[in-house]
Image (cartoon, rainbow over all chains, first blue to last red):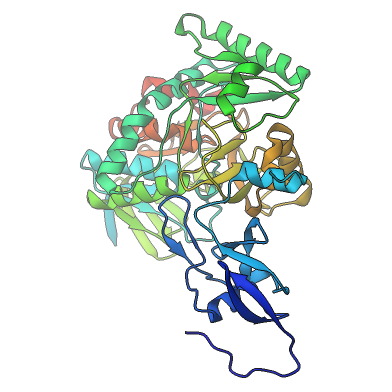
Length: 109
Length: 370
C-alpha cells in the first residue's frame, strides 16, 4: 500500500527487524513510516477487546502506534526514528506496567 | 415560538438528570444548552461517586449523599437499559489513602467527627492497616509513606462522559427535546403566567423554569430575583496511557477507567474562569502519584485537562425557588456526578409539586442570609 516516491541516494539505508523479519529503512525516517512501507497496517491490538490498531495521527497525539522497540514496550512508532539493528515488535494488548517499572529502574528480569 | 411545560437551562449532569426525570413523568421538557464554548464542568469531572469524608458540619448533606449512593446502582442499570450505552458505574467501595503520619491522624479525627455527627444514622467507614492494603493492591506496590486508608463500601466511580451521553440518549428516547446553541441571555416573566427566554437561537416559552447552568446560574438567577453567590474552583487531572487493571477500587485522587486509562487528580485553586492546566499543579499531582504508587512512574501521561467546579460559599449544593417568580427555580452543586441518581428523582418532584422535598430542604439560600 505504501511505497517510496523516490529512493534518494544521499540517504543512508539501514536494516531493522519487524517481528523478526529484516527490512530496509532510511536511517532518519520514523519507525511508523518504515512499518507502513513494509506492509504493516495493524501495529498492535487493544488491551480491552484485542482489536487491531494502527497509526492514526502520525504526530504523537493519539497513542495508537505503540510498539515494542528493543524490548521496551509502548513506544510511539511515529515519534521514534529508525536506528541500525533496531528490533521492532508489534504489541499485543498493553504493556505490563510492573514489568515496565522494572525496566525503567534498570533491573530488567 | 416553541413552548414547553418545563425549560431546563443547562445540559450538564444536573440539567440532564432533572430533565430526564421530568420527561419520565410525562412533562413536555426542553433542555436549553449553550454550545461547546460553555464551561461544562460535566466534561471535566474525575468520575468519583463518593460518600466518605464529606459533610462535616451539615448532616443533611451526609444524608443526601447516603441516598444518592444507595440509588446509583439502580439508576445506572436504568440508564444502561434505556440508552443502550453503559455508563460504566462500579461500586466496589472506595479508599482515601493517607500518606504520612500527620495525614493519617487528621483523617482519623475527621472520620471520627463524622461518626459522632451522624449519631443514630451510623457512619460506615473503617480504616485499613497498611498490611491489608498491601494484600489488596498486590502486585502493585505501595509507597513506603502510605500509612493507612479509610474504606467505605458506598463509594464508587462512573464514566462522566458516558453518563452525559446515556442521559441525553435516554432523555431524547422518551420524547425530551435537547436544544444546543440555545444559551439563555434574558428571562422575562409573562403576565399571564410562565416565562419567555431569549436564547442565542430565538425565543422559547415555558410554564416552569429550572436554571441548572453551573457557573452560568449566577447571572441568570438575578433575572428571576435570586442572588446566588457562586465561584469557580479549578481542578486539574492527568490521564495516563491505557494499561491492564491495576486498582481493585477507586481512590480519592486515583481511579482507572474501564478502558484502562489511569486518572490522577485532586487539586483546588481559585483562579477565576481560567481552565488551563499549570505545570506546578500537574507536577505536584504526578509527584504525589509516584509517592503513593512508585511503579506508576513507568506510565506515560497522554493528556491533562482542567475544569471549573461550581462552588458555593459553604461548598454545599443550593436548591432555590424564586419567591418573586413562582415556578422558577435554580440549582447549583459541585458534586454533580455523585448526586445525579438522586437529582433525577428529587428535582422533578420539586419542580412538579412546587414544594421542596425534605432531603434538599436545608440547602436553600436562607443559610447565606441573602
